[in-house]
Length: 292
Image (cartoon, rainbow, N blue to C red; front, side, top):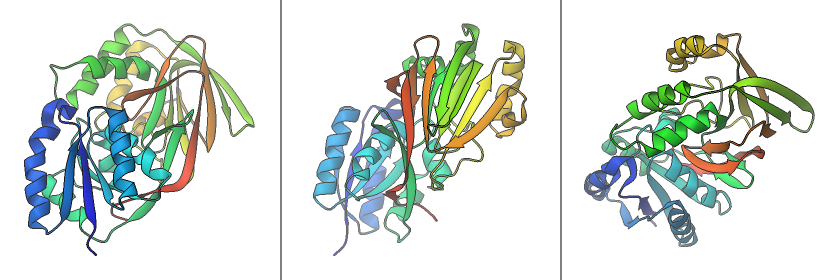
């Protein structure tokens, strides 16, 4: 029996890009002989309920959008054993790129109907699921700015948000406990808990992170001048910023994060929890259609 694909998309995601993509997605899947149904999601909570329904019906659930929608859908599938398909339709599409999923509709649809499957890790923050990267501090400010900016399209919005956030940034103190054994404290810019390598439209903040190793790459950006921080920003697109003395890296399967002032932790580009929060990795708990 041929699989049925349950397509979930938010028509306003990616500045309306997802809605514009849908006719092409439907034509492409039809030309490949695939059976599918398409449903608009009103918000992430609605997308989660649609994912549960698709999984219960035995369908392959396909998230069409950015990392936020993918993370919301993936969290529901983790508990069902259902398979996740992805057609990139967001502004950054970092998770799909790291997985090796084509960013063009034809390539992504062709992958969906093929045989390739793999099991990958999925993360949680206080019980809320994410697939890519959870972070707080300077990143909290930058994410809030990016999400509220409507006039700048594509991945350029993340560069704009990074500069805007830097202008008003003041260092914060972060306290970490990793795997209930290692305690660390530092003053600086951000704490990043990475399942995937990249976020923010191609920023390889955790260049050595692997999606199936059962570990978070914990990237700690310590205090440095704003001028030095600004000079190092271009390095993030190549992942070479980790060579800077102000950047430290640890690995673990669980990390408790707190700070000396309130921060919202963001994951996959959306708010997920208030600090203090506990971030955990769940080893190979998600089955996804992606190249091995």
